[in-house]
Image: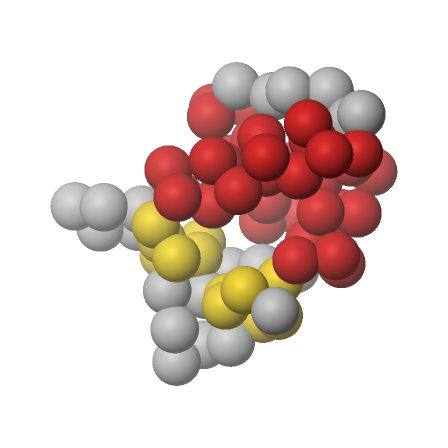
Length: 71
């Protein structure tokens, strides 16, 4: 499953510590990408566990965000 998340990151994101994308927004973008590419849908929890392994930093808070921006 990590390969799909890594492919999504490569296709749609750029790491950027000045910007944050909410976890739910990022997951929705992944689901849209998965529909386009035929990749499997992942739950928000599973997606969240795999995202930090792609090199995109997770920032905990009231709303979880990731330090990235869309291409």
